[in-house]
Amino acid sequence: MLPPLTYIVSRLRIRQLRLLIALDELGTLHRAADRVAISQPGASKALNEIETTFGMPLFARSAQGLQANDLGRCVIRYARLIHSDLAHLHDEMQGILQGHGGHVTVGTIAGSVPLVAKALTKLRQLQPGISVQIVEDISSRLLKLLDEGRLDLAIARTSGSQHPDAYECLSLHPERLVLVAGPKHPQHDNPALSLQELSTYSWVVYPTGTPMRAVLEREFAEAGLDFPRYPLETSSTFSMLSLLQEDPLLVAVMPHSIAGSSEEFGLLQRLPLALQSRTEPCSIIHREGSSLSPLATLLLEHLRNEQQTLAEE
Image 1 (cartoon, one colour):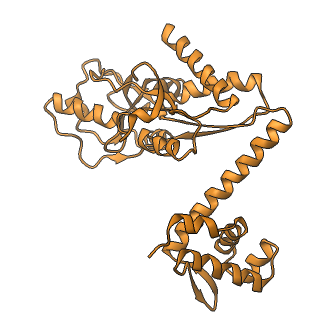
Image 2 (tube, one colour):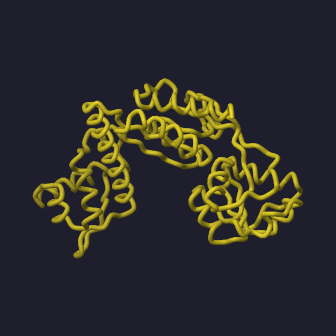
């Protein structure tokens, strides 16, 4: 049985976590000990303490070295996250001491990437020494990262959360979606195009449960059509664009903001068929009651300004 969290927290040490990462990368206790600058007996003792703390072995021993088991891989993954968080802490403190703006992490759904890019460009012009991490994902995963404290801000939808009241939100305009295909798709200039005609093609779609997938499913249902069978599924805008480039017969639905900029570069073409449904508006959100850093507060203000500019256009 896994020991209580309080017991684990009271016994784990940062050097032990560094040893786990080194063992995963190097495979032997001797080389891992050299990496973290301790003796081999000291490394052996530290590994034993780690496994005792968790109450179970984390590595399989063999003549070739140490190989993490399923539990070990899980612990190592979180050891890397903790180490990464400490690195961000160090960078942010160093930036503050040197008079820079520190570090900020912002999450965004695909359709709001252009908004984030515009706001960050303005912010970096004012504070070029800041460190920024952008995480693009679907709303449910962004909310999880926000709950874990791994994001300062996120642009996402809160309706899928089990506790939507846990966030402070600034609502944005509803996201426009468009149908797109590669530049050589045979239906790109068909003024009488119908959803029934497009249903005969292969599709690349967002995963089940995402708002953009729900819009597409609703469009097919209201047209009395079956949803396309065997679609390609991805939440990655880059993967979607790459697939549309490789297969000229693929069809997709994506945010208007992404489609517009991609069309300018010749990566795709919007199809002459308007979607009737709209997605739920997204919001700029952060955790209720959380204290935003000065840099995150400044980024929030830039996001608000850019959103206001877009709304007025």
